[in-house]
Amino acid sequence: MKIIEVKDYQQMSNKAAEYIIKKVIQNPSIKLGLATGGTPVGTYKCLIDDHQKKGTSYQKVTTFNLDEYVGLPGENKNSYRYFMNNQLFDYIDINKAKTNVPSGIAADFQEECHRYEDLINQHGGIDLQILGIGSNGHIGFNEPGTSFASKTHIVELASSTIQANARFFNKIEEVPTKAITMGISTIMKSKEILLLVSGEKKSEALFRLLNEEISENFPASVLKNHPCVTIIADKAAIADLKVTT
Ligand code: PGA
Image (tube, rainbow, N blue to C red; front, side):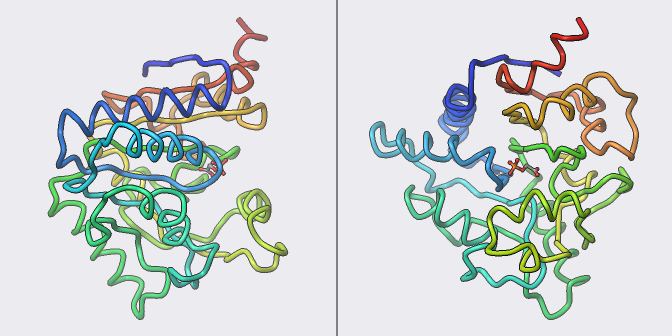
């Protein structure tokens, strides 16, 4: 794993966007894996800015999002489909038909899990997956204890995840308790992974990722088995590492 240390959230966002833009220019038909949450918002802003000023085109790009809340339709402002439209897709020239987010309102969720996994495979897999990390080490919504062999599946969200995400909802009771997420093996099949880590509240997770053994109890640790992971982390997230070295 390669770690790029940056000053702060803004620099992390700039660097991540530069990284993605370079890949999109090299391969205009790239299959991008995308993430939601607070971490990538600044990166998406930078992509929009670059698209508007420099014209980087996403017309041929296909995207696959990591996850979606069970029960929320795409029109719900807390759904990840809504987030992606609102934070990125509506402001670049991407073909919405090529943007994929698992359905939170599928009639048959087992079927939806298979459909999503197959769709990724039919496209030849993900070239570059953007990831955040939960403070409990989750990647996507793969909570501690998830099998490393997992494919796209339905999960019960950990209470720490529900609490962390309550900031986006009016009240905690509104946070869905289940989600559909790419599995760990789905994520690991990506050819390349870019992990973004910002802020003091993620420093323990980054410390654990770099220092603990690979274990299903800390899902992000699996990334150490991946041949091509780049971490962009800011000083606040790296602080814990400095204390011990
Ligand atoms: P955050 O979430 O970007 O909102 O901190 C990351 C995650 O839970 O994977």
